[in-house]
Length: 120
Image (cartoon, rainbow, N blue to C red; front, side, top):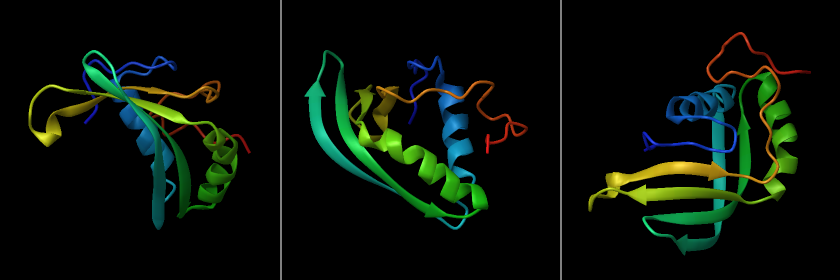
């Protein structure tokens, strides 16, 4: 569901964002839940901007608790997801962009690089 034209403020492309989401989720092998609350939905020319807040819960490796603790301050600010639709079918919706006012990519992080470790 990620658009081939995906780009964002972190210079991630379609493959990068997919790998980054996998990197985030791999530590939550017991459970991971993300509660989403939509704050606004704005129609743009060919897309919709959905703005909302997230709460993340989960368990798994020892890093899972650390990740939730480190992510908590960023979850105060809302996320904006830009979606576009290329057809009439429900699966024709594609994610074009994610925006967040304060999330920064850690120095040295490359999505999908299994040798990258959390800085304890």
